[in-house]
Amino acid sequence: MARARTEDAPERPHRDTRLNLRASREQQQLIKRAAAALDKSMTDFVLESAAARAEEVLADRRWFLLDDEAWAHFEELLDAPVEDMPRLRRTLTEPTVFDRDD
Image 1 (cartoon, rainbow, N blue to C red):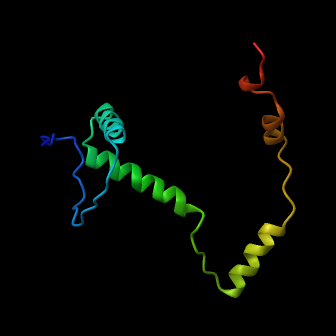
Image 2 (image 1 turned 90 degrees about the horizontal axis):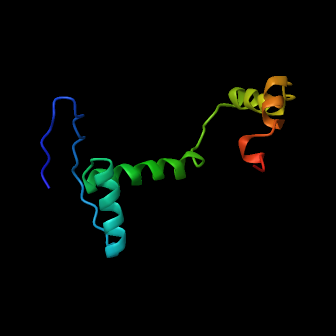
């Protein structure tokens, strides 16, 4: 489905690789409806969704390389006593709307 580019629409990045995948009819229809709800092509919707999920998965698996001095400082920060934050403590201990029984 060709889409006309409007003046305020962002330009898509160049795509030079193809992904092939199989989906059930139900999955395809679900993705198609979601893409339409956001006024996106199925390709844009799938790529944006997959890339966002990939970032989430990889966020906790990043490597951090530090020299000995930076590593020692990092360990000091981790081992330091936690600063008391009364406002944060109060916020975390007050009942929320989810704690109500009404």
